[in-house]
Length: 153
Image 1: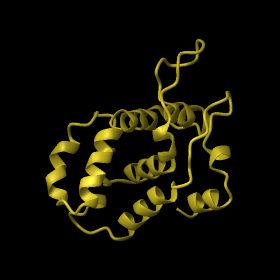
Image 2 (image 1 turned 90 degrees about the vertical axis):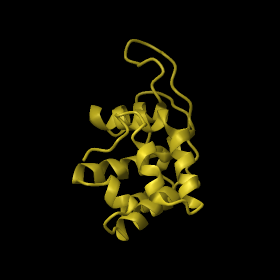
Image 3 (image 1 turned 30 degrees about the vertical axis):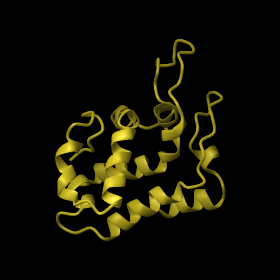
Image 4 (image 1 turned 45 degrees about the vertical axis):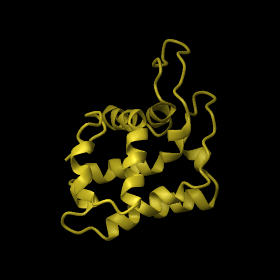
């Protein structure tokens, strides 16, 4: 989290998390700290049965959760359009940035694509949890998300 805080404090988000091979939109990272601070809080208050403990069960899942938090600002940017042989039609910008900007593996890029595709449902669940709905109520709906979104166990 310290690296993300430093990137944020120095205003380097759009320098670090971008696709250097082409021009891409600039995401709004003004409230990005909410995502990485929340993940840090969940990680630091992990208890059996907690949201963090339930979803993050391996070092790989921990890494993927931090990548998701790092790329949250890209969730608001629409999908790319097909532009050349190397572009993937309708690939979310977040996946493009992850693949070409920070050179993430295909599995992690698929998880980012799944998160983008399910962002409305994820936001709905987040809002319900913010309103003190019991976490147990949401274990089942999470399994309806794209399989690529479910973080490795």
